[in-house]
Amino acid sequence: MRAFVSGLTCITFVFVGGSPLQAPDVDKPAAAKALAVAAAFIDDFYSFNPVRLRAAMANASGSTGDIVYYQGWAKAGNYVVLRRKPCHLDKPDEVSCGVTVKDDLAPALKISYHVTDVFHLAFRDGRIVKVWNSSDDPPEFDEAMKWLHRTRPGVFTGPCRGMWKGGPTPGDCVRTIVAGFADYTAGHSHSNRKRP
Image (tube, rainbow, N blue to C red; front, side, top):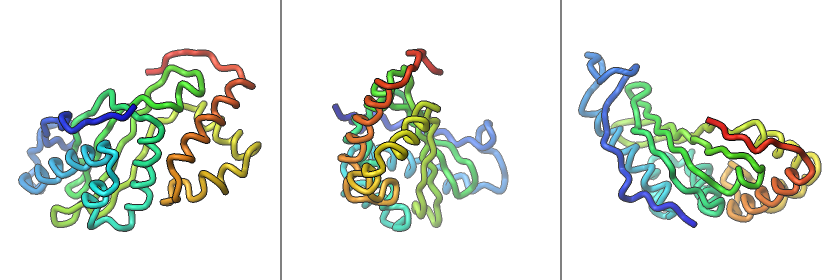
């Protein structure tokens, strides 16, 4: 199942430090434009169309491989958007956008958890020049990944070759990781507890 969020673009509010943008040193029109471009970027990512995503990152070539890889991972991992926070201005030239999703990974770990990814976008002259992301993966994710590295190193030279570095098979990688997580869970005890 794929999530289509073309109709989910959030109304953009410009915030700095938790209050409406009032600082005299911030270019309000430029900040508003950056926030709108960032929101459109999130639409492009969750369109699961790599051509569209590459076009959005035309001036961020150093980030394209990683982010297009992650898009392929998200598509094959059946990411569905549950909640999309408005993008906000972190610095005059940097915006972040948080997106909470459900995916195939948490069920494979037998945990009730929805990860929130935060996309960070750096701007120059109104254009995206760098993109990176962070997430609040649960500890079970890290534990299972360590187990896979230890017990199935071939995963990371095969289907997960170049993982998070623009590798060629993100879909095969996430499907292999999901299967590995299920095997890990079968041999380990986890409580099926809900997380915030």
